[in-house]
Image (cartoon, rainbow over all chains, first blue to last red; front, top):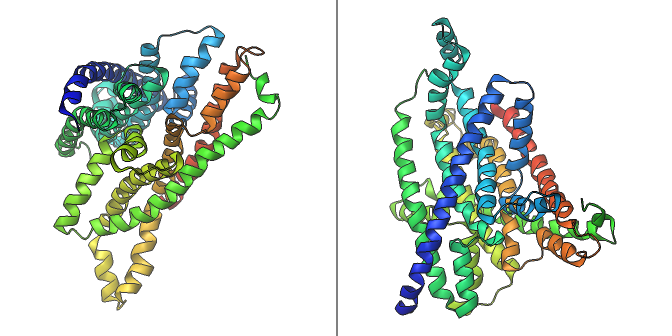
Length: 219
Length: 222
């Protein structure tokens, strides 16, 4: 391994790292919003929306992100929907993540004891208040292990972005290997940067999981 | 919309052949992962310090490394560093087996740890031998817990194998690309139809398998 090569590649990787993290975070943010909305619809069995969210969850949980991105990035422009690679990456990750988050929240919501709902209603809360102030916070802490696993999964999935020519870590590594053939150095830095991105998330996730385990309500 | 390209020549058949390439890789890897995962998971539940440390490092590395990075490490890295020249398909089977074994061993460890101690004690006090205890009491319970999860792993394996096109294997997505390129003049909108078809192909395969796992989970819950 050549130290000089490593140093000269370093700035390229930090730039790609920033882009990967940025799009990853936006995608995860979208995933949370979609996931909560879909779980809300299916919990209250909102007509039409609950069926739609069920179809959405099954469609996106059972297809790979690479295929989804190809469809959004190369397929949709043919019927007049044209979006940039960055938006496509964030939206694609958000749609994939939304379906996983929805499943996570749904199982959390199902695990909340029925007496909680009844008590909340008996206290005179509206159904909206009950959901957002009582049921959802409890379900959220029950879903934490699933959420942590999903966040790690989604950050890992960002590696697929290189297929739609986003200049992420994977793309940079591939590009450098193709240009200069310093395979060992390029792959070494790739592993280092992904470790930098995901090891803290993994450790933090474990800590959070341990913390919320003591905060089980109602059970 | 570009769906007409599918009916031209043997395009549909080519796509299905491509899908089979991806499925074959994932099924072989899933099989290897289940066997090795059960072995590693059983080893891990022995709680020997050396095994624990090594398996923890292995599991954590696989947990945080994207499968695409692992593919590149094995396919390009070994060629350059060790001089081993393997086919892309071999490399992907190795990568997905490494990944699947890690996932599977964690599930096996969890399932083994989830069997209450009282199950062992009761069967011993009934006079069953160690072999009988495992064969009639413990293993049937573990299979019930494991089977839905293993089936789930297979669908995840199938979804992940779509990545193999990035190291040059001609699977369904690559075949789709080739068809789109070849018909660029005659049907410029082929990208929509082809990619939508590939999307639904993956959906049908994974949906059927995940329904099976859900069904088993419900059936055995009681």
